[in-house]
Length: 270
Image 1 (cartoon, rainbow, N blue to C red):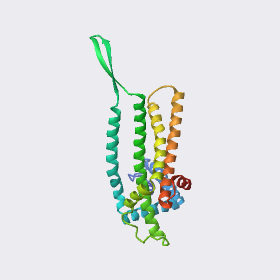
Image 2 (cartoon, rainbow, N blue to C red; image 1 turned 120 degrees about the vertical axis):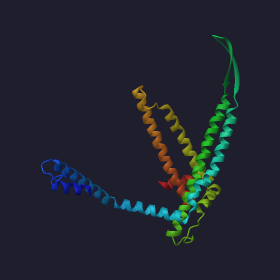
Image 3 (cartoon, helix red, strand yellow; image 1 turned 90 degrees about the horizontal axis):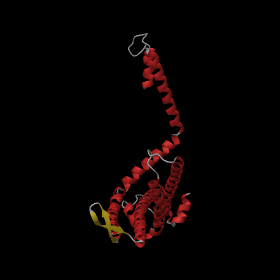
Image 4 (tube, rainbow, N blue to C red; image 1 turned 180 degrees about the vertical axis):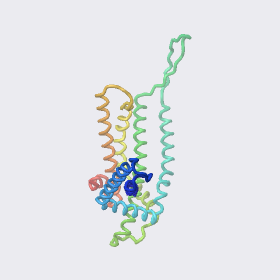
């Protein structure tokens, strides 16, 4: 519309209606560029009409699913009620474990004389216990996320089969508390599969975090070769993490639909 107006203005001898000022040429160029850009966007939209229709159908199906099962909106709140006490308990346990240190008193000579200095020393066993505790804590948090994803997939497949597969035993209207039921089903029947997937994600996330700590800030200067190798390694670890996360989410969906174990579900997700 703006491009057409700019072309009209150029035909009317410029925006000020006075010939000879030269702005009609500028208006013609702007109008032609805008019309060409609009034509290009129109062609691109026409070529992607199938993708646009699929996206619109997905949005409509999502809105209908949430309308029929409003508990899906409260599922994150319910999960948060379990995660917050778990996080608090794990932090308290970590603090108690970190308090298992030894005090080594040393005498240091300074300008003011002899000073008694107390050093905190962790034994090797305590260090291993802290690392193991941190790994288990991460595993537990990932398990909560896995149960949440399973509950969402469980409720979605309940709605889909009840509305689009009349041969299924489900009624026309899916249960309104399917999301809450999915939390119970996942925690009771599929804890092993969800725990295995959570462990895979948790283990892969650790080297990614370590690589993030090793990589220097973008503005820092150093050995160019070492920085390039660190960036390449970080890119590989990030790609691996995202690939496994995508695979794990699809595996959770397959577990919710077919009830398979995690390995079979991961194979089906390919």
